[in-house]
Length: 403
View 1 (cartoon, rainbow, N blue to C red):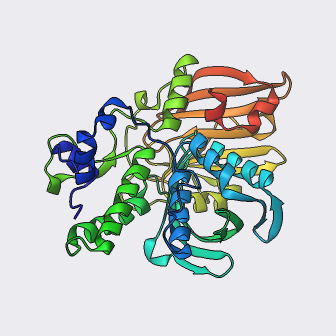
View 2 (tube, one colour):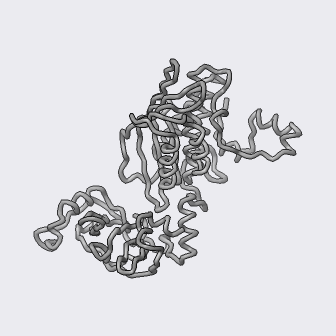
View 3 (cartoon, rainbow, N blue to C red):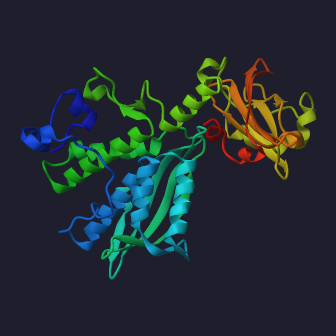
């Protein structure tokens, strides 16, 4: 029975029987091992039933989809038939691979895990694989996405290729910045692994799923336990001294451009109590025309500088305006960029920092501009400003333009 987690095994210097055997094998000592993402051929055991092979393929699909962009795309290249019924429309494999590539470039950090008790496989000529998958993803700019969705694959067991794909989002989480769904799955599988009866197949399966969730959480920068902790003290947390690959990329490029570090601009106060709405008939009457947008933004809770709600809304083609409202006092204020003078405005900010980056198009100079501001005491202090390319560069996210 695999009782300990991978982290606990490392801490206690415990090896599995397989690892012990490998340690006694000369070739295991002299030949370096390289971890690779599974290919389609490797994902399908040769002696299992078609249903078992279909489940193994699904496991490999979401396992590689939770790895690096190159690993995900290498698998996608071999996972699809030449023509696929893709969301009710027949598409060439090249189209699907291109769509997948666009997605991973937008969300370079991903953890996708199907809920084990929802997966169903029915095989006739082809196999239909359906279920519910939960995910957590992070973009270059630090945006996060979390939720669950239905999936449906048609899989050809003769070629090991996907012949159809569809699905739909069930829940898109709001204000979720941590992989809570994936962590919840891990705890469920950990209980089944540790509480299972002996060496039963179901116990081993739960332990295997738990170990795969370990790797998926690590891919989005989450670690289990800290050095010196006992098993009962361990829990999931953001890895110390390790940022996500997307954050590392942005920070490295930000350093090259001398861009400010958000951690150098900590918040001075945090939100507490009940959100207070503006006084649109008195003190805040100048913002009365935007009252619905402001109220809706405040209902979602603070998203900037501790206790502020930053609310951006459209004002025409390529035009947007920004209002920042204090959740503690209800008082709204403007932002120094927006409107027709700053087209294609996009923002990058965090709840735990006063720093904000604004990207906009300077059409008179045909330049895309990124500016940094420190928001302190209801004042916007300009910091750094960069031209990052022609106006077309503003169609990319801020994090990508910092590369």
